[in-house]
Amino acid sequence: MARGARSGTGGWGAGAGFLLVILAAAALGFLWSIVRNPAPQIRFDAPVLGLGSNTVLQFRVRDARHRLKSVGVEIRQNGRTFAVSSLSVSPAAPTAARGWSFGWRRPAEDWLVTARIARHALPELQPGRATLVVTATNDAWGRFFRGGRASVALDVPVRWTPPQVEVLTAQHYINQGGSEMVIFAVSPGTVQSGVEAGKYFFPSWPVQDSAPQTRLCLFAFPYDLDPSAPVRIVARDDAGNQTVTTFPYKLFPQRFHTSTLELTDPFLQRVVPPIMSQMAELDDQGSLLKDFLLINGHLRQVEAGQMAEFSKHTSPHFLWTQPFIQLGNTKVEAHFADDRTYLYRGQVVDHQTHLGFDLAGTAHMPAPAANDGQVVFAGFFGIYGNAVIIDHGCGLQTLYGHLSQITVKAGERVQRGQLIGHSGETGLAGGDHLHFTVLLDGVPVNPVEWWDPHWIRDRITAKLAAFGAERHGAAPRFAP
Image 1 (cartoon, one colour):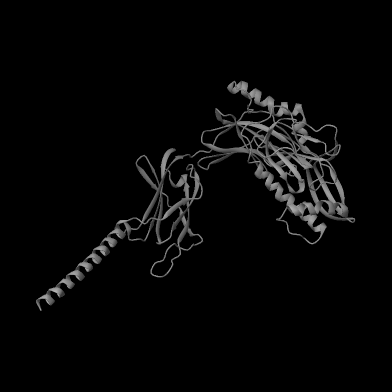
Image 2 (cartoon, rainbow, N blue to C red):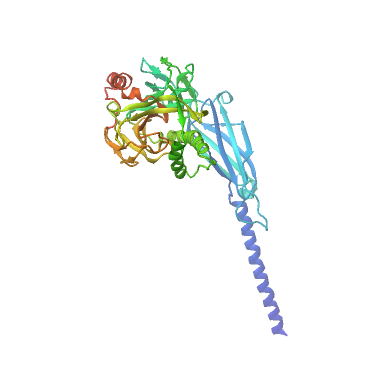
């Protein structure tokens, strides 16, 4: 009996010990749950470079396990704290939370927060440096029931005044469809500047690496822009402030050629199937004519966008020092900005603008690089067939189309006059010739100006030389 009693007492003791372990674990788990900080995630859509007179900040707050309780934005400067009260919080598309809780899955909290910081709302905030602080709190038990809390602090400049622009060149003469260059200086903190011509924007580049606030800008007045469209310099600083500055220029409106092209069945049979076979993204329209119209219209627009993308892969220096080469001993079969009407069996079926020069000579004639540069594309390019695009720096590029053979590759440095291929009739070509286009930030411009040594001297090199001698005693900005 005594042994039985001892056995029962020992069993109770083991069970009590196990219960105490469970209770201790539960207590530790509870203590951990109220001590830890299961914070939300804060992510800015774009880098915050500064605070200006009317800055809009956007950021996302996400929590996969808890509900969002509050979001705050404040600015700290010289021991003072300024709360930003203009906040809007809207739900973003929810995503499923990771993990399971008591057998059910809770959708993640995902919010888009917009904060507006205006000078009139913070009159005591001073220009200079400040700390932007963003906080987000959820409804977790963490931090002793105060909720999980995330915080992001950014040291940023505060700028109340927009950038200052000083125009340094005096004369600017622009032919419609042509190019020009302006040199100007911007104030510190300016992160983007250039020339805006109607809906088009042409970025600027530093004249000297040692003086990044002095800028040169090659710009165009595109052929399709209304002559009344304004041309002006736009500058934005790191705080989002913007200034618009006019400068003296004279525009010469131009009248461009018109032409009519008769589409024939043999032509369609020759050019359409090769392009359709190379462009898998084009859906067969059921007839050669419909496929041609898809290529001539839709694909032409797509490739215009691709040329704009190629323009982003440009050198920050001029890669050339001489005028551009015009292919000699050739006949001009089409001019820049020719307005073309397409006929099929006597009926008008399409209208497009030809944005380059068609130069015809002997079959498979050599095609030289018009100037020093770097190849950014070499391959099949839709309506242009086999094509090469060369970058010459600061947004200036040239395109060579309808080639029968390409002798260079992307990334290769080429010299003025170097063989890059041979003419042909690939793409939408009616016969063997070279299609030549000059592009400025992806916008086609009249090549005639770039072939003219006098134009190059007056518009480009003389301005750079005079500026360098007068301002810095430095050479014009050409790459070595």
